Image (cartoon, rainbow, N blue to C red; front, side):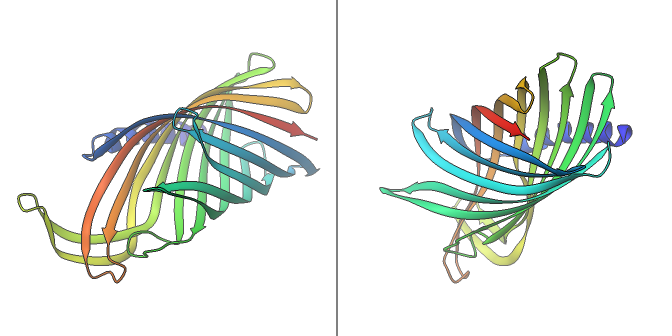
Length: 267
């Protein structure tokens, strides 16, 4: 397990460099925050049920744009392996032109986490497969049931009593985005020989760096203080609803910085 976790860390640290090297439109940097609360109930040895809620802000904390609720169960197979399944209801606020609306999403998640202790350090590798359902107006631009694989490697220090600082890298890969093949004329600025290939596009669409610390206030009550840096690489496709005309394909790069605090009650 030790060799697997260390090898995975090296691979994940190399991935952000390949994403950062891509040419795309720079959409700038945003600053926001997150507040969450969670309850964790032990049902049996190794088996837990959990539920949490979260709200998010962006545009320098001026805009409340997302809230979500999650419920699930986790099972610790042994000291090295843990699994979890969960469902999340998400409500996101979107603004286009002067129209603002809230759009719901439904997310189903399966986690498998391997961990290894090295003295006061704990290394873990989590693989998360998630499917997100949402309403889509144009199936040739977006997918209604989007599959994503998230790989996270984390190092946590457990030698400071009630405080447990940590750092991690989280890579998000979209697995079934709409894919178009085309030829683009840079001089004339037109697309030709285009064809919709289906939901076959696989690419890294986010690299997240996380830094924080957990603080156990007392038995059963803990807080999580953190800072996140997200580098996002979103593919923006514009086509007609019949899939017979491709207008444009752009990669949008953005950087998002978030600070947050979470509370957890375990019983």
